[in-house]
Length: 46
Image (cartoon, rainbow, N blue to C red):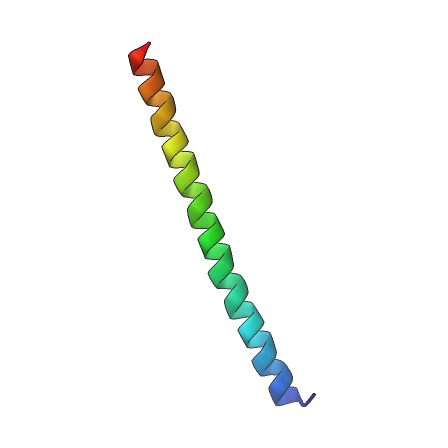
């Protein structure tokens, strides 16, 4: 592999890691927020 192809491949891998990392982080934050809302709702009903 030439250096140019290797650097291009590394850039694609890094971009995919950032995209999938952001999606995973967003899903985790959404789950935490909904869990907090559910806990608050449950406490209000009690």
